[in-house]
Image (cartoon, rainbow, N blue to C red; front, side, top):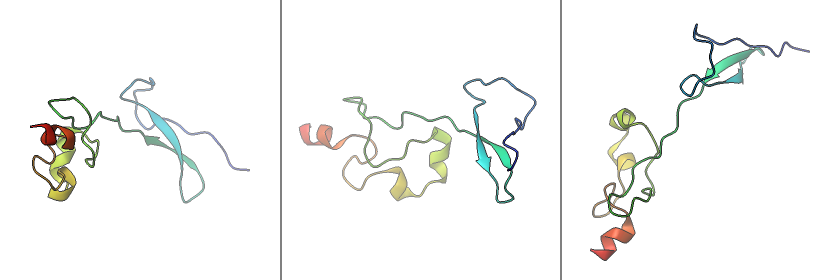
Length: 89
């Protein structure tokens, strides 16, 4: 039976909002600490404040690394407004 203990990778040992970890099993069979990224609400429609469908929920800086087709939806105002608000105006 393997050892089920693992340690935090950094000096800051407190389990704060920005310092969450979870155990990850490595190919060698030991447990390591994997850092959990914060989740975002994602892009929202400025008119109705609902989440835009078909666009990933990432940090603002991460959108620069995506392809254009992943940053927007292929329609008028895609990535800027939701479909129902485009139909209304």
